[in-house]
Structures are given as structure tokens and as C-alpha cells.
Length: 286
Image (cartoon, rainbow, N blue to C red; front, side, top):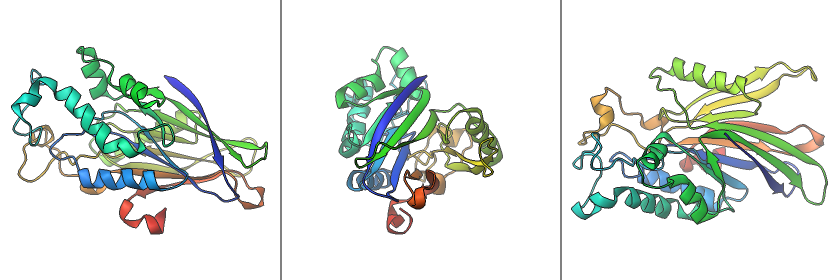
């Protein structure tokens, strides 16, 4: 488990800071939605006070000797010469697609996923640690806490916001199971919001009321499961997910936007909300 404290400066009262978690990219899966991903990357790159962190599984990382490998269905436009370096190819494509925000100015850090750890155990290097070193960003491990400490102008006043993150372990298929899983994660950890992934479906539980000993007003928490950037099942493609009976999940792909106002007007306490991230309507919602 990792712990990181990250200072962020804001410029004025009611300034909004947006955090976008990106989990389960799965670059090179045949159902990876490159257009959707690019819109997200471009939005983060071009929007002030907007940051992101990675939650793992940046590629499929399934090598030719793996029983799951199928060159006809797993990797579009795969060439024979690529088979021996498929892991390196996926990393390169992830770096290319994510390049505009894969830097310390925008990225709060990169976490591990089960696909990343599996390939590292097979002797292909520490994929995520290597990415962090190459791009000078924080290594977040499989789980941990990110404490954002906000300050404003020349003021010495600061306010904090804590994110608990975990790549995820639940494979529940029904929404109810997913909600129970992430609500427990939010309530069991000392955080404002719990963020996880792994099950490739965008789900939220929240706002959650937590009784407070120090205030008549309950504390606010959220739990969110980030969607994947692959559909899993697609027309004209045969995927592992199809063979296991999963359906298409387009409308729960993508991720969430965590919007924080560290210094609201009238000296109110820090406030935040969680909304679905959709680059098509950012002018309305973000």
C-alpha cells in the first residue's frame, strides 16, 4: 500500500479542481475505444486545474505462449514480427496515446493492475514502475491513499481531500453486488472518496451520509467503480468476454469526474461531487 501527499494550488474562491481516474485501459484489445479515450486525454490536457491518476491494466499484456492468446481476435492489425515483443508494443502504444497527460504536471501517479503484475512476474520487467520512472510520475502500487492538500494564493490556510484507491478484486456481474462492494470500501477507509476498477463497469454509490461527532451535518462520502475503455464484446469480433457470457457495456465504459471546490465562498467547508465523465458534454457538466 502506498501513501502520497500532493500539494495543489488554487487561484481563487470557488475554483473547481477536477480529478479524473483512468482504470482498465486495455490498449490493443479489439474492443478498445480509441476515439473515446483520445477525447478524455485531450480534455484533461487542455483543461486548467484538471488532473488524473492511473489505476492499472494499461494493456492486455497477453503473450503468445499464454493460453488466452488468440492473434485473430485479441490484437487488431497484429503483424507476425510483433509477436515476440507484444508487451513492449502495448506499452509503447499506451505511452503514445496517453502522451499529452503522461507527465508530472497532469498525472498524480500510476497504479498497478492484475494484468500489469502478472506480466511482471513472468519476467518482462516492472511495467508500471518503469513507466513511472520514464515519465517522472509517482508510483501508486496496487492500492493506497492520495491526500490532496489545497492552498490558495498567499494564504497559509490549507484544506485536504483524501482519495483511497485500489485496482479492485470484485468480479460481480450484477449491479447490486458492485454497489455493495464499493460502498463497503468507501465506509471502511479514512477517505472522502474510494475509487476502484477491475470489473469494467462504471458504477457509483453516493453520496453516502456518514454520521459526524463534530457536526450536526453528516460527512459526505462517495464510492466509485471506474469503467473500462474496452467494450469487451463487439460485433464481428470474438473475445474472451464473449466466451464467458458477458454482454456489451458501452454506456458504462469510461470514467468519472471528481469535482472539488477547496475554498467555497463564505468560508464554507470543502465540497465536492462526482459526475460521469463525457467529453461530448463537458461544456454543460464540467
